[in-house]
Length: 148
Image (cartoon, rainbow, N blue to C red):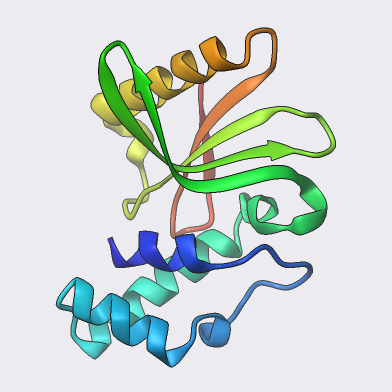
């Protein structure tokens, strides 16, 4: 949860992967308090967030790559409320991407998580008919794992 919070707080940027200074001491302290983390656990959350930001999905925080972006997007689909970690629209293709942050290295091996992403795609396809919608997990190992 702390990793998610750190990724939510990161503004769009250009260039390099942010280092540990990407978040203010106040932000780190707030996340640590909110989730009752030790300093070591908070540092681990930062490393995990940096792994995502330095990986294949780094473009999802680049100003030049995006036409639109938001975190913690709430949608209603099939009578249920869905919460998307990150929703972006690429500037180059106009495609929508639902990006789900995971702390595990292989979330694609968990059928319930894959089904969740497919539901997100179904919901967005109704909102944006005729537009390309993709879904993917982002992992601390820097992988972007697209789910079809």
